[in-house]
Image 1 (cartoon, rainbow, N blue to C red):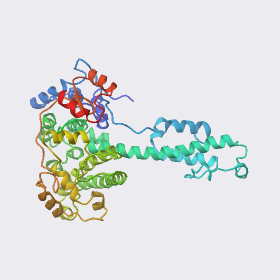
Image 2 (image 1 turned 45 degrees about the horizontal axis):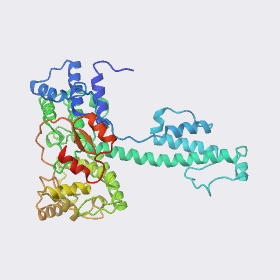
Image 3 (image 1 turned 180 degrees about the vertical axis):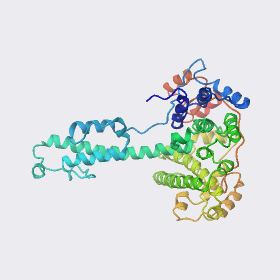
Image 4 (image 1 turned 60 degrees about the horizontal axis):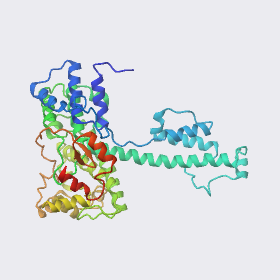
Length: 457
């Protein structure tokens, strides 16, 4: 059923938690939400929202962006399920959503396999197929060799597709969680309970979902003046604010202080499980690559995409985990088990740009290099107490507390709002028309070209 007009902005904000909407467009949706609900924001919030919404796509001359507004989603098995329905009598026509459900796909493979007397996992084309005599003995002798082979091949391909889909879905969750924390996992009822809470969560998530900019400096922080203005409204309306929902994306000591022990433990369990999943991805990428821990510069053959996505997810999960452990008073656990941070791999052209501008490797890289690998720490194969992390940080002149190595990071100050630039391979471009043209021409995609482009654009 269609949403009520008053609820439509809220539905759109909720949908944005899994998208890459520009913060300017989310600010416009928040204004629409307040208007639909008859809410008059305070002067500071109204001014901050207007400053951002003035650059929304609905108000600018071009009215569109050249950048995709979604994360790369896994490709489902709808086509394979449709083919199975046409070849196997026991497989019905299934809805589109079934192609995204691994359990449904596996059930179809098993059900269809029974028709040709094939067990799940029997994929060897030379050993597992039935010959004419075996087909006759199994009661499917009327099925020709050609028709039997067609069905056998399809089920073998479907099992391979299922394995790829599971991997892609896992990677998708890692990417979305690494960027926006647990915002995408919020149930709609929890998200929509309070309009101001929904506005803050949606805007901060949109800021967190922003793409990285090709730079030899720091990336933009998610918490800006608009997010801060929305957060002040949450402070002023403590009775309505859903702090548990806010903690899914903004785990400061102030926010976590409003939660019950049960809520804190629920979040901790989720992050603890996610940390272990990400650690497995990191270990797998590490074993398949030749990563040099001392430099973290990409080499030929390194799976930098998987590593960097997992490293981003590890950073997000670790920050939430540290904050929750600290709020629960589990200092003794952190004293014994303090897994380190994981740096991302750096492209050679970026490393060159750093050296050319008088910089060098970030000190955190040296700390990471001297500590046990995080997956070994979580499995209990290597000891990494907080004292060890602090001593290694001291060796390289890194503040272990301010740097987030041994304690939750201090709450960052709000940065000024800056409109979202059009990007081509991380390089900021003047407008979406130019971005589309440059992207089509493959500009900045070559090694070393981005660093040069960043200097003259």
